[in-house]
Image 1 (tube, one colour):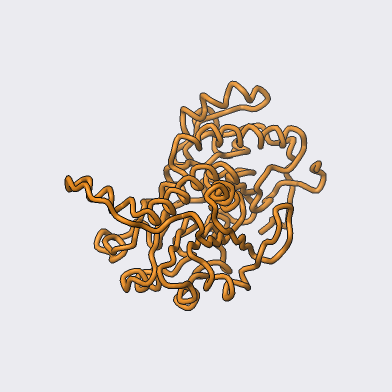
Image 2 (cartoon, helix red, strand yellow):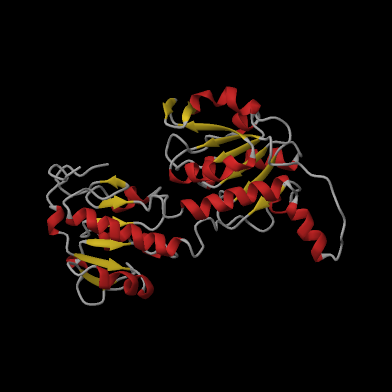
Length: 328
């Protein structure tokens, strides 16, 4: 989505708002050519009016500002601290440039994905429950090694998951929106999932949520997975049809290990919360200390690009920014 009337030069961006004091303290001293102010996108900025803000960094731990997205109508560039941006362009409109956080959460989310795979394959949830009950009892489990893993979505997060899985001696199939070859070899397209899923032991979903990917893994698609396959979702909850997945898991045919689910939060009495073969985390992939230095680095990189007259990274829409003269 792009504004039909780009009219803001990158050189005109000079005031940036930061949503919390800690991030402000980490960044303000480094941006001597910019004016930094505190603003959580809810009240009023400290030190200037809303209409004076050129670049606004959205809060990470609160989406309350989304109830009234008109607060950013005069902002030229909105920088998210999240990788996902579904629903944001529609709410802020086409005139505000929007950038996602790109690689900021890739490491943390990849850790969660690999952790979920290990926990599910080695029945660590069972061991933890035994421990809480004071039971010390050995058991035999599945393994990660020698598993056939399909990672669907090979952006920043999917690629980070793949990098961390390679030492586990697994067979990895990379799947993207379309088939291609790259420096790492073959990438298969989502239109090949009919052939890929029947040969998949562990399905990792790391796609962004779009009109094309929503409900991609519906009942018909899940039915193609072999018995006892594991579904791991670290993308967005509605990429996988919750009702269809629940039916498969409750029946004992499939297993799941989820960091995201639809709806969120999942009700406490939902069958997936207690089903055997189900692990549900409360969307914590990006909620860890590693994201803070990374989001700082990303913002500083974005500002350096803007100062050099170059387009920011991870632009979802360019809004009113005049990028025709931006450098490569």
